[in-house]
Amino acid sequence: MAEIAHEDKSKMYRVGLRTAVWLCVCALVLLSVFGRVCLAEALPDISQLHQRFDTANNHYQNKQFKEALAEYRRLIDAGIRDPVLFYNAGNAYVQLGQNGRAVAMYERALRWAPRDQGARRNLAHVRPTGASPAPFVLWRPFLFLRDLLSLNEWLVVFDVLLVWIALAWSLLFLLRGSAIRSLARRCLVGGIVLAVAVVGFLPWRWYEEHGRRVGVIVEDEAVSRHGPSMTLGEHLRLAEGTRVRILGEEGNGWICIRPLDVPRASRERSYVRQETVEEI
Image (cartoon, rainbow, N blue to C red; front, side, top):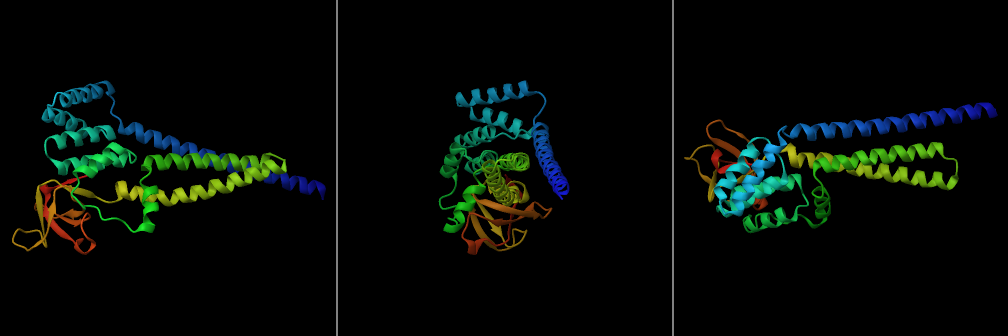
């Protein structure tokens, strides 16, 4: 009986270690994929990009805002996704009096760097007054946590928690002391609880960044209509800088939208000309 018990315990150790190894492998694979995605978004000629960015900043410092914006736009059109670039481009738009396009740039900056207080402060300055209705008070802590980290940062947190769970699992099976095993068990339970919470925020953050199309009104006042035609009745007059959800293109120069920064009663499906909206 003693030998059988010993064999069962050895088998349990092997299963525990195998599980811990698989958790570590999963975490390393996720980190590898995350790193490859980040590297794929970078362009090869880094020195040339830095030179262009410095040139744009020099134009801005010399109050040559059109020239600075042209350089920033070239970098953005080349596929650069950097919060500092979006922030600087937004500042250039503000100097040129194009507040709607500035809102779009600040929103892009906050997608990549949600804790950027400069972008958040400038966005509040150029966004239309009363544009964003206050959310329900019990909903605010969840919104705060969702916007605390970007999607990439949430993924890194999840990877770290996977490693934490794997280490706690390994210690639980390898160590013999009751006090240490109790500590390892608590770390394991805590890691699992936190990982489950992070898994709840991951799809929500993904939806905010990639799951829906959001744009900004970039004209002084855009008229939304009940259908894709100038002959149809007006629905709303949307101020420059108002965010809208893009539902689809009509193919004749019109897009279907749902206004976001308006009272809930006015958030109905309507249509605007495509050139009046810049997608974030």
